[in-house]
Length: 147
Image (cartoon, rainbow, N blue to C red; front, side, top):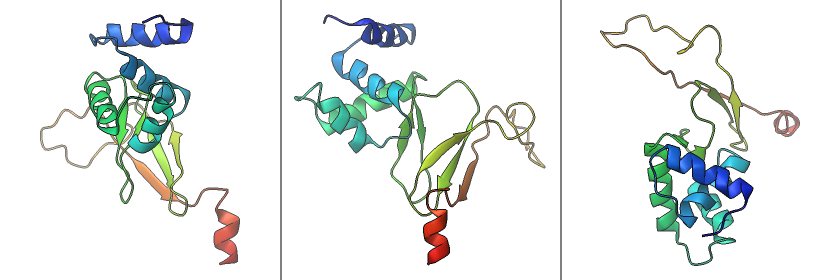
């Protein structure tokens, strides 16, 4: 498989995560590297333009491998399909629009990771906090004000 510079960089990320470099993995990681918060159907549609013989099931398999390897993060906002993003390795959170379901990243709220301190940790050594803020995005605010 001949790779251009961008694909070679993606292949390097796969290798560094001890994953075999395959065309579907490079394609899916490439789709997610260009933009985040995509569901599997959207990723499949974008990857299929480069890999017409791929299947949705194959994309789910690739996503599972990428999540397990720590190259991709899976988020599951309530009432929405699972979403995937390539922004990993930090402790960012998400803003979700209640109206259009747009998802945006928000950096750590305050302080050091994990951002918030629970009142009782019950012996846990906290490593990550996943926070989802729900509201109305700026694009939807005029529409909800008119309703």
